Amino acid sequence: MKRKGILVVVSGFSGAGKGTLMKRLLRTYDNYSLSISMTTRAPRPKEQDGREYFFVTKEIFEKEIKQDGLIEYATYCENYYGTPRKYVEEQLDMGKDVILEIEIQGALKIKEKFPTALLLFVMPPTAEELRKRLTGRGTETPEVIRKRLSRAIEEAEGIEKYDFVVINDDLDTCTRELHNLIMSAHNAPFRNEAFIENMRQELRSLVKGEK
Amino acid sequence: MKRKGILVVVSGFSGAGKGTLMKRLLRTYDNYSLSISMTTRAPRPKEQDGREYFFVTKEIFEKEIKQDGLIEYATYCENYYGTPRKYVEEQLDMGKDVILEIEIQGALKIKEKFPTALLLFVMPPTAEELRKRLTGRGTETPEVIRKRLSRAIEEAEGIEKYDFVVINDDLDTCTRELHNLIMSAHNAPFRNEAFIENMRQELRSLVKGEK
Picture 1 (cartoon, rainbow over the protein chains, first blue to last red):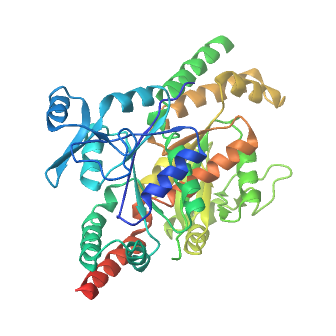
Picture 2 (cartoon, each protein chain N blue to C red):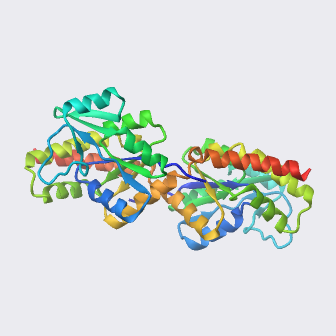
Picture 3 (cartoon, rainbow over the protein chains, first blue to last red):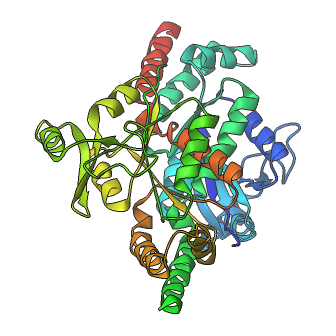
């Protein structure tokens, strides 16, 4: 049977290591596509259009909204951020599991629109480890670190709405675990309706044949 | 964190290969315990008390029912079959994932009493393959095979109530897949409440400390 891809939403605290984890996941397994967001914010140095984001003007973004070209979008610090629909749907139809790295509000919007989306939450092994990672970057002021930790507290309130939590202690272990979680989701009965229905029909014909 | 075991219910058509699969699972991984049912039916040749079943009298079985010593029981062909509670609870507390091989009615009763139980349904790759396996045993009359296939049609009606389906085509692959499905279930947020709550508290203390 040809199986359809799963829309996989990955969230997690800033500093939990989502970015590295996603890169590793895509490099290790060939069943994934990473969705790239569209934004109206200006590219930062070293950011490349079509790699980190699709950088567009406000006018283009609002045209996309009107044409229902985004499966979700939000504003953050006066900029738009959204997920282009076309790429996601094409990849899912091709059987790819499409990864969206997205924060909790966006994740819950996706779940509303796509109830079969799989929601994963990446956690650090301990809060102290999270603080260390945020500090270790060396680029953030104490005030920024405190803000990120406060934001983590808010995000932590929604963890129960996710399908799975995964602890990012060791990168290799966590990548494998993440992959196994997504593979397991393919075994839910509602993702195998055609196979199950076909089995039922075959069984009925067999019993008739044995009469 | 010490993790609690999961109550895993495995169902599937007669001939889907559940028995062999369970044996392989228990031999390959050390996190499982197999629950042994209690029955009032007479042991068949080569069956051993405490291995295939605990063979007991009707009186003893009914005493167990009265004392709430069974987590589920049913009658089938005028005999009782049930799952002793004590062993299951002890093993779960020890962190073992306890496997119950049980048909669909029993499985749904378990799910009602233990909403966190994980329900897995083993399927053959095709209905024709199922018929072959049933015929291949060489011990069954056509009438029995037809009955088993009819029973499979009935059981197939309930597949959507299971958490996962797994296709038993190759024994090794299926064993590994079954194991991965059970492992993935450990990552559900409701099975990690203590860890999540602890993370929340740690984050709150850290933010206070940074002020």
